[in-house]
Amino acid sequence: MSIIYFLIGCSILLALGFLCAFFWAQRKGQHDDLYTPSVRILLDDDTSGEAEK
Figure 1 (cartoon, rainbow, N blue to C red):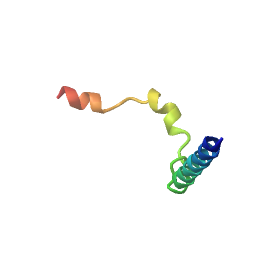
Figure 2 (cartoon, rainbow, N blue to C red; figure 1 turned 90 degrees about the vertical axis):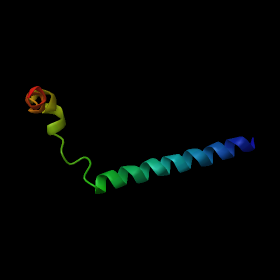
Figure 3 (cartoon, rainbow, N blue to C red; figure 1 turned 135 degrees about the horizontal axis):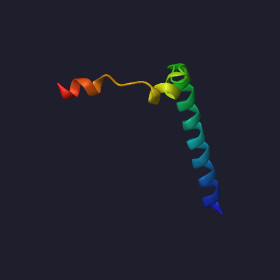
């Protein structure tokens, strides 16, 4: 029965770690650009022409 208390404590610590990581990413601007990732596949890469030279 004491293993249940240990696992609950570990899961709470893990959840707090993920919550801190989420707030850190928000503060650093990780989710600011929502448009570019959706159209990145449609844009041409200029690096393929440089590799041929």
